[in-house]
Image 1 (cartoon, rainbow, N blue to C red):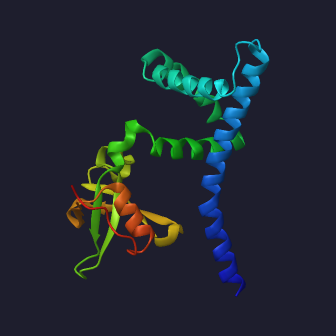
Image 2: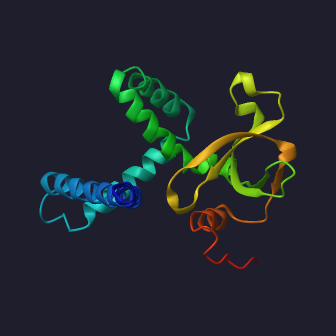
Length: 194
């Protein structure tokens, strides 16, 4: 009984935490920017919402600058400091990896939805290619294998497995459809293909 309750609480936490953190981050950014601008700009020029607009403009400018070589190199040098601090490196690396997952620059790496065959049993799992051969650790390169993430239903985790290309079959599904399909254990309807 307690094990089941704990499992449901953990599932609820995993479901709610990303939403709450995202909303809180957006709230904090808007409130901080509003407060800062309200104190810096004369009252006759300031209007409500200016801080939120300024925060979005700042994110746009930072994003644009990160596409220039010198700024990107400067950021990477500064980022190395975080990777050398004992506790900070673990937390920062986890957040950085999560943000990299959603980065438009890496989107192509995660768009390939595949079916992974489990031997000759006829059983197939839906997965997502996360790393190609040239991106794998040196010990795994040259094996004509790829890293595939196999999510589990109802968002309780998943497995990252090294799979030979011969055991993969590309699927004609968008990443969003495949993720929704797997996470709901096939209960959801797939989007109609255009």
